[in-house]
Image (tube, rainbow, N blue to C red; front, side, top):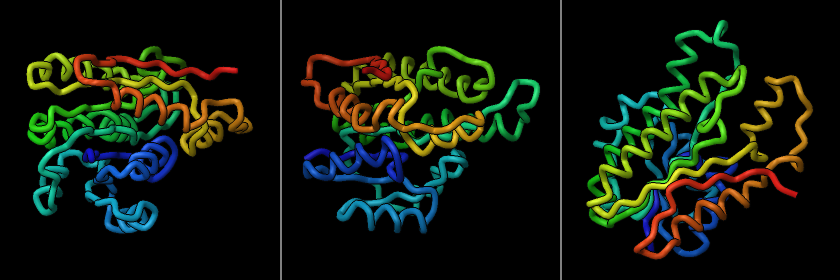
Length: 229
């Protein structure tokens, strides 16, 4: 039985990954932004533990976790949560830049730092569910793409630093996926949302679990997932 810490379990890819891991008998610690959200997650995923910490305020995560019981060992830390707001560089404000970078980049870095002792003990695995925007930047996606390019750099640096400790690091780069975030993006773009056109969350979840289940002695570093026929 493995122990997993997961962000973004409330919907989309994170919810699918959490459900599959719970069904196979693993132990889950689900990160929630507040007590109300934690209660919702506990009801949705019976038997799962919750950790309250607002990813929008990464500087407070250390304080928040000091008042909660963390697992002694972590077999995987799955960074799946994320935020997106579209806008041109000429219109993006410092407030929006800071909010995007905090949730998408600084919070994963801080959460990883706080759980590295447990990951090292179990020779665990850190998975960053990044985005196609982590490999290229399109107009009006500047803030989001910058945060995801930074997330790739974080993963690559972490992989090199923790290799001797047996910690594996994987980045997954899904294209547009049929999630509530994608529905929001379509509203911002002024387009009709048709979920069937995009990658199903089940496919991305399978990709994440494939990386996790790879036998020792090998490591998947980067996986790109694209819509297909």
